Length: 203
Image 1 (tube, helix red, strand yellow):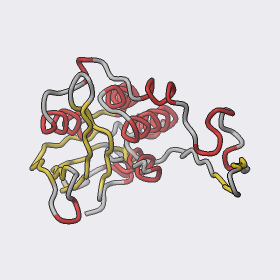
Image 2 (tube, rainbow, N blue to C red):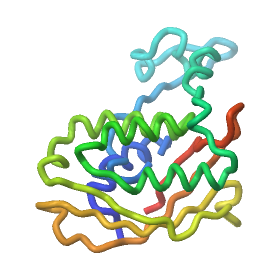
Image 3 (cartoon, one colour):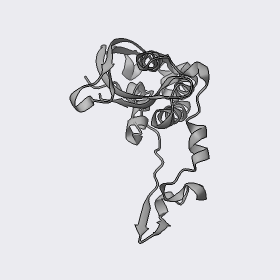
Image 4 (cartoon, rainbow, N blue to C red):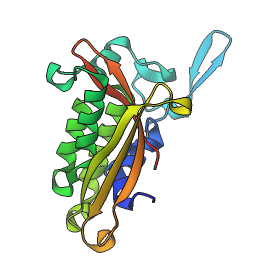
């Protein structure tokens, strides 16, 4: 069953970027994705209108090593000892939230991740801060992990997470049935331990 508009509100943001995400309007959908384009001719790279808004060092699809290092920095307490622990920790936080705490919730997800997953959570936080309807309808999402295991076949190299979730609230969110959702995740080992680096809801 397709996720309620709410759960997808924030996830779309993430998925749209895939950068990728799931959870609300999806607390994990809808946010503006930032795009940059590069046109290479011979050995010369020219900036296009698509990346005109980027800082000069980042135009042409380049991200300075120092900037990248800062974006991928995680606190020791944000990392987990094993890939599975990182996956389960992030998933539990991702599927359980209330509208009134959603912005802080997404920022916490950002602290537990790096790369595309972090960007996704940051964008979801920005979207949630502007979505007053979620607060008006007192939307919340509650779920539990059905399974979390390394993928095989087309999902090889990723973690496949199956969750059972129910979104509650007023208005359009009244009486929504519980649903099963599948998410692909990637983990990366940092100096402190394992963290989520990609988060891609499949439904």
